Amino acid sequence: MTTYWVQFQRGDGTGFGTLDQDMITCYTGDLFAEHKASGETLALADVQLLAPCKPSKIVAMWNNFHQLAHAQGWELPEFPFYFLKPASCLNGPDAEIPHPSGYEGRIIYEGELGVVIGKRCKDVSVEQAAEYVLGYTCINDVTAIHLLFKYDAFPQWTRSKSFDGFGIVGPCIATLEDPSDLVVQTFVNGEERQNYPVSDMVFSPLELVSKISGDMTLEPGDIIACGTSMGVKTLKPDSTVDVTIAGIGTLRNRYMPDKQGQVKR
Image (cartoon, rainbow, N blue to C red):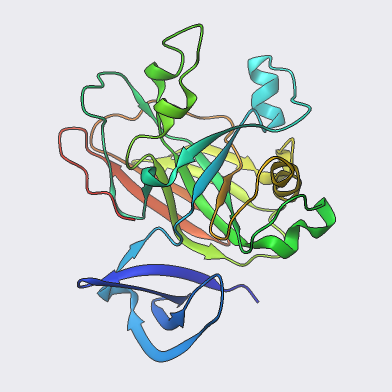
């Protein structure tokens, strides 16, 4: 049975619990350690959902889908190509997508599947990897695309993708056993822009956990953003972006470049 973990804000306080339709069962303790139900329930309408965890880092993939690689003429990687997004870029459901101060270029969305690490792991095999995964979530890997390749000598992967609010995660962590049948959809103002299967990945979610844990220790709450596929385009002002993965939920945000966006962590 799938459990849907959420983190929320109510008044000046925050909490976490499990979501069942429109009700939250509250928990005490630590989502990634000991926890238990508190006996309190809340209506979803009475709280503000936040990013469902607070990662120490987001490890984000590039060129991890066969269809996109074929369309772009890219060689398939022999090992995952990744970059890091800092914890400071974290943003949550229904938050505004901010436009970086002083940046006059385009902003793009990237709908993705996210893998949430459940316990510390290092050098784990593919066969062991599932034991270290708490669940899966939706990601919008926002990018200031004009910065990315502004300098031929040094692509700005970190800078272009790490502005405050550019790592959007949510609405929950779904404890799915097998994500291979999932489909990622992205809608902009209700129009479908992306629709691609997780099964098209070059490296599956569990292969990513195994290979990346060979390079670095993955901590509880860390997120692997599995990369995106066809359909990425520029966001226009006052656009609403929905990243939907059936079995997980919908992550909705609005791009309002003329306003100071409120980041929700």
